[in-house]
Length: 411
Image (cartoon, rainbow, N blue to C red; front, side, top):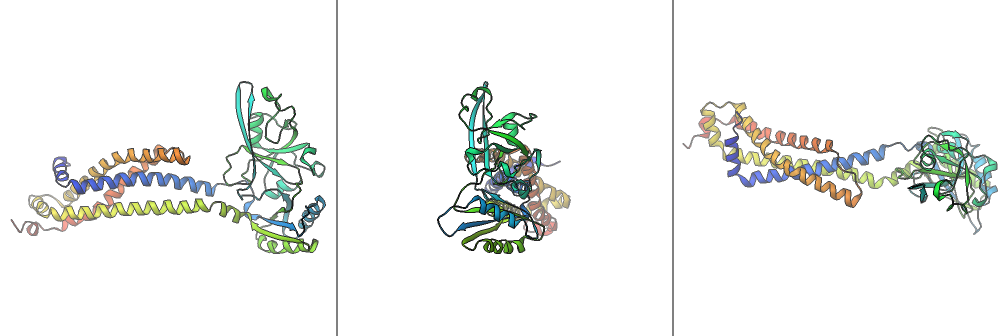
């Protein structure tokens, strides 16, 4: 019914053209499947929620004119005055700008009985208003109060940890409130208790919801909040504003700080969303590149199939005319060329599967990408099949306009 014999003999006589379509199909599958997977991962990263009120946050940097350090009194005065400005939901001192990609990270291994485990976390110092300013929910216990704040971390007594750190340190389902922990996220339990005997321990007073505070996609277990005014030559204030008030407040806040003390340099006024866009610039670029690659490769393959099919049609006008004269229907001729294309494309996809998996293995090995799911491979094969058939359909349909008398005129 599908005339595989004539199709195979025809393809054997046109080995170069068939080989080109096979090669194009294989390359298209390898590039489209992997590019689509990378594209999906990047879009997922770009669109994933961070857990903070990123759309209504901005930061401002303040530096003294001299060489001195900021005093705790200055920080407390500034944040108190900023909270009184109309449109400000809350304001706080914070050590690292949210979603800036800049943060203090800690990684420590620990031996618990016969199991070695690693806790990786971000250390964030802030004041009692830090969690509310960020817009992160408190799941258990309490956050800091004024009496918890210290000027030297060695004087610190309490910390608040995120849910991920609590689960990594104490185990899922275990109540961490009242438990002791180091700033590295390690509890003094198990076989490493003796190793931590000289380490400074803090009491966990609260558990915050998991949130990507300093980076868009945190690979850490979470965050440990420290109630510490860190002496420095500059400070960063975080302001959470009411909807549609951020633009006005980004002008009003610097003016207010200048009124409080005019002998300071106010710089770095930026929204958290702009920090996020800057952090994701490479990912946005990759999304555009992957989309361009998919469109370009698909277009080249489609045009190649159209061109080669047109050449085959012109070379076989006499054969088509004879088949028409012998009673072949128009749809039978179209079916013949579509089956021919489907067969060639299928051979190309067999090589394409090997090429796709090989390319993905290289991405996994050298770029820490995830393994390509089977669904992307199957979807890519279906798309290449559909692309090949669609590209071959128009040239195949043109064969139905060839008159048997014209095609066999030279007989």
